[in-house]
Length: 69
Image 1 (cartoon, rainbow, N blue to C red):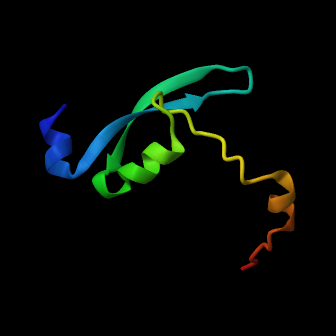
Image 2: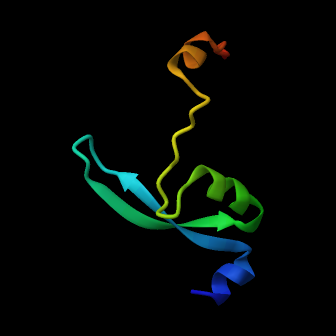
């Protein structure tokens, strides 16, 4: 578990996934490229749960322009 990620240019990180709305969770290991590790660690806590961003509010989302194709 140490050599293959190093040779492949990635690291393994745990990730918590919510299965349904009743609070059931599951865990998995995710391959994160070395160049994206800083961003991954900033967006996830140590357990792999996605952190909530305080700067994105519902009013920001509603007022943002939507690009139509």
